Length: 140
Ligand code: AMP
Ligand code: ZN
Picture 1 (cartoon, rainbow, N blue to C red):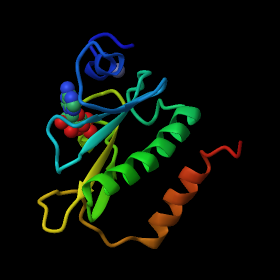
Picture 2 (picture 1 turned 90 degrees about the horizontal axis):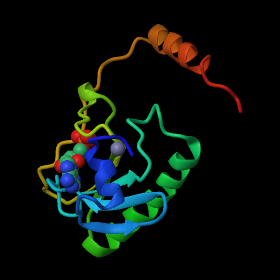
Picture 3 (picture 1 turned 180 degrees about the vertical axis):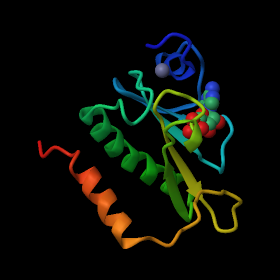
Picture 4 (picture 1 turned 90 degrees about the vertical axis):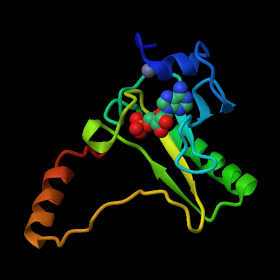
């Protein structure tokens, strides 16, 4: 539990939330300012600032849970699609600095904006980025 972290307080129940699901590791709650009907957040109970902090075990369980929540949202709401969004750092739109995954159901004709402008790539740059990142991945 990190001091003054709103999602830590929500996770432990000190601050109320509209909770869809909870277990020992996670709370899944409705987003208070939803982008669309059914927009919800998966938050680990344990505090992680962002994806760089998240451990493999929590990450694995979190994504498995996301598949269950996504299917339940689709069945309950009949949405036409779904975006999973996860922001890290202010520049990326993170406003709450406790890791969370957004599930945003999509409906034909909705006004949700998730996206980016595609740029033309430089093959040499792609290759050098690829090598730099690849070199930092361990095989274990
Ligand atoms: P992000 O911008 O990715 O950090 O997302 C933070 C999200 O948390 C936003 O979509 C907010 O609407 C949502 N949020 C902030 N406070 C609460 C709260 N008390 N209960 C539910 N959702 C919240
Ligand atoms: Zn926290």
